[in-house]
Image (cartoon, rainbow, N blue to C red; front, side):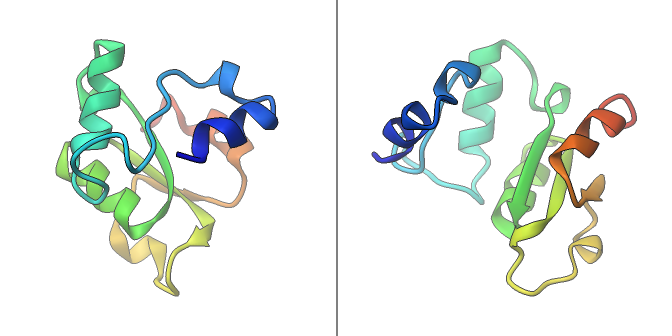
Length: 104
């Protein structure tokens, strides 16, 4: 319930569509439903999208629906070695996503 007001206050909501928060759907990550929902809103298959995440639940949700996944080296990794999870890439800056989009 706080996601949209926060994004609006930061001036970011106009760049994001759709915006799906943890309480919007009957299941949350690591269930793939939120990712499948967003892909469906865009008219795409999950395999045609890319999840950039910062947690194990992001990784598991993406893999469960066949979506490529890039993890950032900061965030909610819970002390795990993100490389061991087997994401398509691990980056230390969001700017690096642009360098790998065509590769993933």
